[in-house]
Image 1: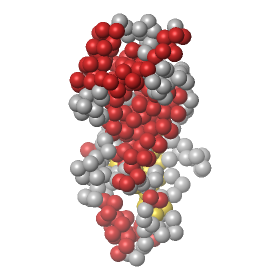
Image 2 (image 1 turned 120 degrees about the vertical axis):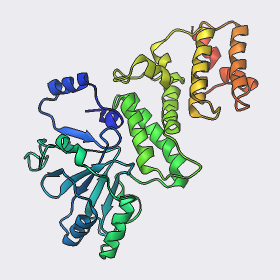
Image 3 (image 1 turned 90 degrees about the vertical axis):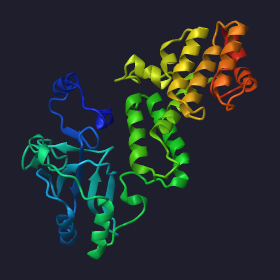
Image 4 (image 1 turned 45 degrees about the vertical axis):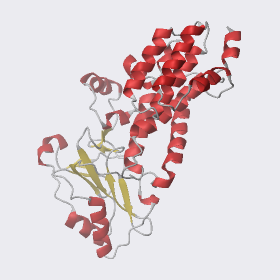
Length: 354
């Protein structure tokens, strides 16, 4: 499934399920962890007897156990745990906490190495009402218990399923991630909905939380959309590939700010104002990336041909300036329409080309 991250927060429809049974009849069965399933899994991947004794002591009983080549997977109620890998000081895996952003396969899926089916003691759906949560702050509790048993646990980024990003590096890494995902969408490697899910999972699982100064999913996804808008409206005029909007409805595309990609005609003054009003309502803070994206889309349409009458163009720019709480000014907006910019064609060049 190229966009399984979609199902971290919502179950597939009956139609989706029926389609999968037809299209992937011989495929393995993956279960995404986190909010939709309401589950977190502990994947025990060690044969160290001391570590196993610690795990057996602090893990609550689980009514469902899955086994493969070695070790086992146990499931618990999801209460916001983050995904993590816990290794010993030599880098040997002890266990994984599989939460949002991850999945594991259900029996009778086939193990890639043994070529034999995974097995479980029962059907997971039959025992959901018996599943209990992990102890509070389980990751910290487990590490403490391992230390008491004289099992040294590796520290730092290497024990996470992705590199752990400290607060001081989060903004720069977010920009890098946004650019990477945008390139993936433009190359046809992933649809937009998958990239948005990957950005959400990264923010929620692998970025240090700072009280009073959160890096929100909305901001990170907005930066990713900003890169896409820049690429398709700049002088390069990169085209979004076939399938980029897979799984999206028209209103989803409109909310993303990318609806202009399906409308090559110039927008009327009213359509530009309607677009801005809707986006400004969704992104109330003038400093949000969503507002900046909406303004860039509007300026891109103002630069297209045929041009709006000067009075109507001026009214749009005044509307943007008045709603921007002194973050954008009329004089600067006028310069953006005429000056060279990586975000869009120069207005003069674009209009002369028409």
